[in-house]
Amino acid sequence: MKRIGILSDTHGYLDDIDLVLEATADQEIDMWLHAGDYGDDARYMQEHTDIPVYAVRGNNDRVQPLEPREQLIPLEDTYIYMTHGHEVSYYNRIQKLIELGTDMGARLIVSGHSHHHGEVRVRDAVFVNPGSISLARDRSGGTFAIVTYDNGQFDVEFVYKQEIV
Image 1: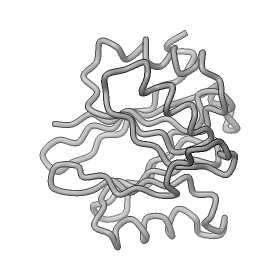
Image 2: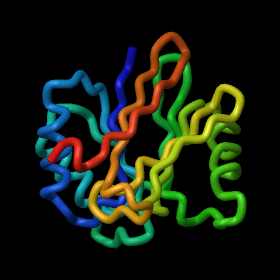
Image 3: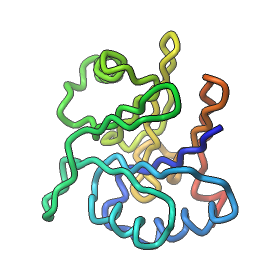
């Protein structure tokens, strides 16, 4: 079983990252993913946890060194495809991202950019946008995600900021 913490669009709000890391400190998280905006935030996370942090660059990331635009990360018998999502047209964006990821053999597709949390399942693939813990645009008050992968199945949990404050 693997547990993956997912953040995106933290936009320099380091207090929110501290809040998330503190709230999950007693949980068994195997890796953190940061789906962009800001790459510096992912580096900050890596400095404050012993858990590996993978990151991609978002449309607001300009500070050197830049993270890659996309990553394909091994996960047991499959892969995670992660990109910020701003380079994909809004029209049919989730479907296009799922196609991009599954074409590379990924079953977990992660994207940010919209600041709206959500999950979409297509066949055996799962798309996850963790939303934004800092600047939510979906009236959630802020979210991040924890995905559990066990025996080939994904379970997605969204954690709301008001639950951990």
